[in-house]
Length: 388
Image (cartoon, rainbow, N blue to C red):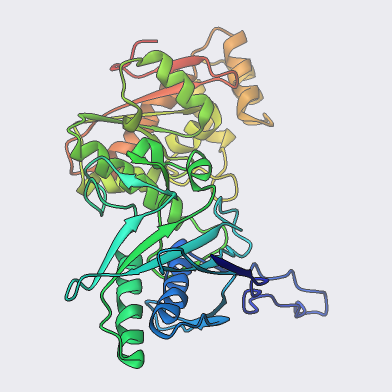
């Protein structure tokens, strides 16, 4: 076996150092990165070139779905004892907090039977699909359709240039991928043994909402395909732990880590309904949902203390308490004020949150309940379908 390593190429410049209007320095623009699918395609290109010519390239250029032609340094080149060729690309996710940033994406290519084209296998660190509802059927490597197409087209392009039949078995592996997968949704979605090879454009946009929303959609798909009659959207780990205690029989894959994206979950259920939805979250997040916000992130929605004071007045808060709520600093302060006064402010918040979700899901017939947690993860209110 021969092995060589090279320093991975720096991502082509997305960083700017211009100046703001008025002369001040501009904040640096966040760097984009490459998906695992793009990296697997580049690794496949390098390994196929070696299989066809006997020589590994130092760099490879691939075509992404939108036509970009990035160049990748080949970080590992290896001839296997059976003559297969292995090439690796180190993933650079740019400035996105991607769990696979820095992972080595390996492609090992064996010649395939004549006329079989490109077939895929999961190597160490790449998961296998075990549940229906995902874009890839159970039993297949967790290599999504777009990366498969990118690799297949890249092999076809190189086969034509290098006078090779293009029949190959492509095994994608990721050292340490099984441990990385524990930090993703894969175990919950029934993808076992490692990470998924993902990407629809080949490009990772820093701090993009798209990947999270994609995971929400896939979670609903798996729930539907496995016959569940309920999904539970949670804003975070505290609310999820609370819901597990309240609904101990709820299967793991019914739990959707929706984060701040209540709207993404509700709108997907509009066209992909399940009979029942339960949403659980902290008081502050659900106040914003009750106000009609579907994106609950602090930078995109805020608690309207005036409206919260009006809600409290509607359930019996006196003038002094109403004024205190209107001038409160935090939603927790409001919850504490109402609790001290014996006023259940969380219940009408939960009911108003249900109304927001129902409007987003309509016209789909989905029964909705909401559970409100305090900062310690204790349920303080729930609508009629949940006992606390």
